[in-house]
Length: 92
Image (cartoon, rainbow, N blue to C red; front, side, top):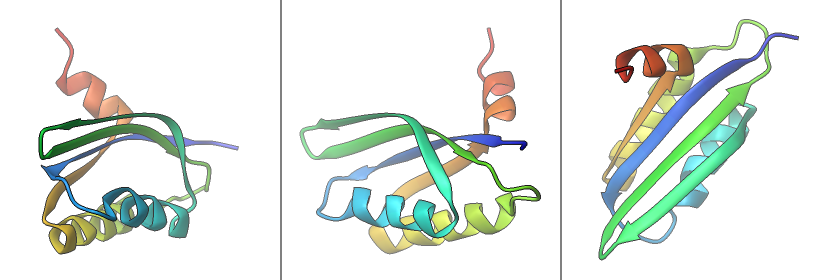
């Protein structure tokens, strides 16, 4: 079974329900958390996740759209990038 891995970043002003809403959307799309890091600096919430979908023909665009819409509702910036694209963009 093939898997697709993503880097998901969430940045914004901290408020109740960010993690619940983001992980709820992930569950709806059968996306699993592989690793997660979260920090709150005063009132600034930051979270980065390595996640994966094991579905063949995973609808990445649909998942990105759902996460972006959730970010807009929460007032935070949510980005979903394919792991390979993320690594390529951040190589030295």
